[in-house]
Image (tube, rainbow, N blue to C red; front, side, top):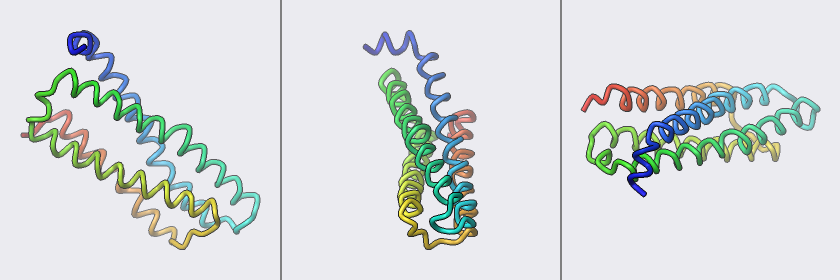
Length: 148
């Protein structure tokens, strides 16, 4: 199996990158939707539209892309287990775990909006909108520059 994975490693890597781009697009857009959603009166048509947009973004783009990124990333590890011994990969994996936590928080907050139970401000979501960006920058720098 490892030989097969090595033969198709660049294809697996490309699919991993595509999945990560799709995941990040959703992670950067969802908190922006939350900010707009706060401005919509509860039970209004606008609020209901945001609920649909947030649910579809999470279920159709973010969740499948996250699973695909993990799957293809896992295949790359299987093909090249030596990646685990590199320091930059430890930082990247730590950021991935943190990104998974942010994903979980976004999912919880989306459910709160769906139940009209959001208690947070637009400023709160503006700050959280930056967290995936910061994590993404660290992940890309680790994967490309491999500084240690």
